[in-house]
Length: 552
Image (cartoon, rainbow, N blue to C red; front, side, top):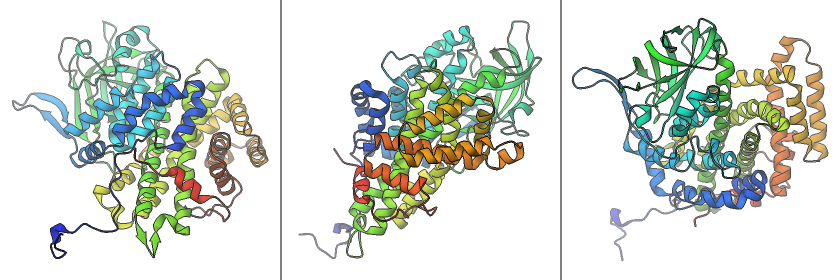
C-alpha cells in the first residue's frame, strides 16, 4: 500500500479523467441525426466512412498535437543563411501532422470531384468532427476547398490546378505546381485602407505581352502565406479583377512576393496570417477584367459555410468538455451533472450546439444541388443568415462551457482557452456581422426567391409556433421601404430568420426533448439572454445525456 504521506504516490481525487479515447463522429448523436436527415439513403455509407476520422480526432494524440501547434507558433523567415530573400514560414511538426491527417480525410477540395454520394455533406460532418482539435489548421483546408468553384471561371486554370487542390495528399514545401502531389490555396482580398470594402482596393494589375499580369500593391490579411496559390483582387485596366498568384513559378524561381510580417492575433495562433507586398508579382487573370467580385464570390460563399461549420465544431468540442467535466466532478454533495442549475446550463448549451450543427449540414446539402433553383436560393440566403447567427453565438457558448470547468477551464492544458480565443474569429472573417446582415437585405431586395426558399424550409416543420413567427418576419420585410430603416433592423432580421430555420430543422430531425426546449426558449420568448435559463418542465436530463461524449 502506498504511503499516504508520499506526495508522489497520491492520486488526485475528484478530478475528471482526460476526455480522450472517444469517437467524435459516432459519439455525437446530434451530428449523426443531422447526417441522417441530410444524406438520406447515403447516410449509413457516409457515417461508416467517417468512423476512422472520428477515432483519430477523439484520441489523446490529436489533443496533444492541437495544444503543441498553438504553443509553438509559426516563425517567419525572411531570408536564408546567406541573406537571400526566401519569405518562408516554419511550422511546428504538429501543424504538419494535423494537415496531413485532415487533408487525408478529404477536408480540402475532394468533394468537388468525388463520385461518392453527398460528398459535401460528408465533408461538412467531417469538418465539425475534426477541426476543433485545433481550429487554426482549418484555415488552409477551408481556403483550398473554397477555391475550386471560383477556379471554374477559367477552364485552363481549372484543369491545371483543381486536381492538386482536390488531392488527399499533403505535400508541404514551395515547389513548382507541376512537381507537387497536392496543393493548398489562399485568398487575399482586404487592404489597409478598405477592409471589407474591397472595391476600394489599390493594388494595380498591369498587363504583360504574354497575357499575364504584374501586381503592385499589398494585402492586409492573407492566410496562409505558405500555400501554393492565392486568389487575389487587384485593379486591372478594365476594373477590379480576380487573379491567381503562385508562390513558385514554373521554372522553379520564387514569384516576387514579400511577406511583411505575420499577424499577432487573438486566436488562430497556429496559423500564419500575413501581410503581403506585391512588387511586380506574376499573376494570371481569373475570369474577365472587371468581374473580380463576381468571380471570387463563389470562394467567399464556400468559406462562409466553413465559418458556420468551424463555429459548430467549437461549440461541440466545448460542450463535450463541459458535459464530461460535470459527469465526473462532484460538488455540494453530488455530481455536478445532477445539479438542477448545472443541468439547465448544459441542456441550454446542448440545444444551441445541435441547432448550429443542423443548419450547417443543411446548407452543405444545398451545395450538392447547384442546378436546383430552390436549393440554390436557400444557399444564397441561408449562408449569410447562418454565418451571422451561429458565428456570433459561439463566443457566448464557449465562454459558458469554459465556466462549467471553473478554474480548470481557465488553464491552457484544458484546451478551453484555445477554443475561447478562436471563438470570435468566424464572426469576423469573410464578412463581419453587419456585412452579413446587409447581405441578407440584399437578397430580400434583389432575389425574392431566397425569401420563398427560406419560408418553405421553415414551414416544412408544420408547427403553428413557426408559422406565426414566419408571418411576423414577412410583415417586417414588407414594411422595409426606407433604406435606413432596413439597415437598422437588418441584424434583428438575420437573427430571427436564422433561429427560425434552426428550429424547423430540429423539429424535423431531433428528439422531441431537444426541439421542444429550442422552441420554448428561442421562439416563444422564454429565453433570458444567458445560457441556463430554460423554463421548468423540460426534459433536460435526456438532452444532457444525448450531448455527452461516450468512450468506445
